[in-house]
Amino acid sequence: MTTTDDKEVIIVKTGIANIGSVVSGLERQGYKSKVIEGGEEVLLAKRVIVPGVGHFAQAMHHIREHNLEGAILERIKRGLPTLFVCVGLQVLGATSEEGDFTTQGLGLIQSRVTKFPATVRVPQQGWNKVTPSSSMRFVVEGYAYYSNSFSFQDFPSDQGWSIAHSYHGVPFVAAFEKGPVLACQFHPELSGKWGQDLLSRWLSLAPSIAASDWASSLPVKSVLPSAVDYNNGTHQVGVTRRIIPCLDVKNGMVVKGVQFQNLKESGIPSERAALYQAQGGDEIVILDVSATIETRKTRYDTVQSVRNVLSIPLTVGGGVTSVSDAQALLLSGADKVAVNSAAVKDPALLTSMATAFGRQCVVVAIDAVQTAPQKWEVVVRAGKEKTGIDVVEWAKKAVHLGAGEVLLTSWDRDGTKMGYDLELLEAVSKQVNVPVIASGGAASEDHLADGLAHGADAVLAASIFHYAEYTPQQLKEGLQKRGLPVRI
Image (cartoon, rainbow, N blue to C red; front, side):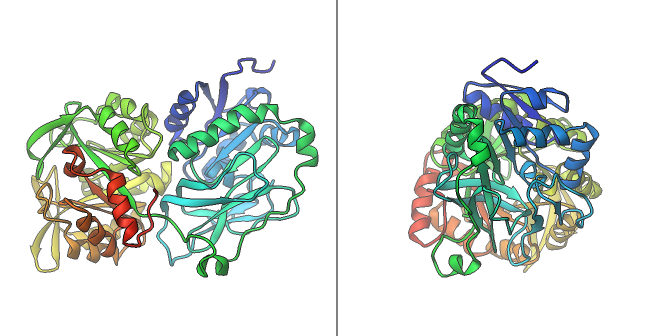
């Protein structure tokens, strides 16, 4: 029997992460979802989404273990509405460098998935411009959110697919479509209004595209532009700088103080998150500032309430001590999980999390206290405990073990409005090749610009947003005038 509910979407589970964000995105469109691991519904459903956050080989293992390979390929052959996201797109290829090309993909696209060059930060975490070919029905020009280390950097031009492209050190495939089948390297469910509009077009238009459109397709041979096209100014180059409002949370309320002391309530997390998204925030970070010292977990109901109002990425930290803790947060709606004290105590936790969910989901949060010129010490348990560990060396080790992003907070500057510790920021960012988020002390556009000039890929702030001194959009407009690439 086919699925008859016109407002139901089947989500094929190929990993743990990001399912909550996809479900929430569909709910905002008025659709309900059913998450399955396998079964005949994959072939018979009216609409199917194959998301994926994690490892290529693990996704393919799940697909084959649950006998999904034939059903997925048959859906494509029949021209049935199917949406592939992130690793879901990559498994359509021949094989992937993620795993040394030893695991075979579905082979629909006879190209290999390869890693971004070492000249850029990997993973690519953030917003990048998408440029579609003129023949695309679902994808339009705009900014999409990416969280990936691998991509298609060459693509067959003789199979009738229309493609869109972006640039991160090299041109790469952002999306491809034919008939009602759409594959996105980016995350439409996390790409704000632009992504919600794309989802709306696919949900409403895909079932009405005739099967004959699949057979004949559109007479296109889309190809990737060359790197020269980007570097000579034909296209805007690369991922934008991010502005990230941070919600320090205690007992279900947003709070703010100085060095996590004398905390004052500043609102309800879901309301603040929705406001900052509307004001142009690129993503939201929630840190449960008392979870570790109170030996408890972050409140999952808080995470769920925030996810329900967001269509941008959400990072959550506080009280994470195990892979199961991280999994619970991801299932509640987080897209990335920040870990601090527990990773210092057990560095292997970073590797376990990266293996389970992919390094793009793993953020190492580092709180730093300056001890001497050009020397900083890691502190844990909300700054209450010194460790004797050098911050720069710990950042390098954490990235080696599996962290895909560094959230770097100057404990000395937190809440002081003195600006970021630029020496600290520069020292760490020069030693790691993953994105670095500057945190602690921001109070002005100048502070944000200085942070970005000294190695930050993103800048985090709290007080200036909570007390309505600036909006993210106002700060972006100022940064844009300075020549910095931002998503307006």
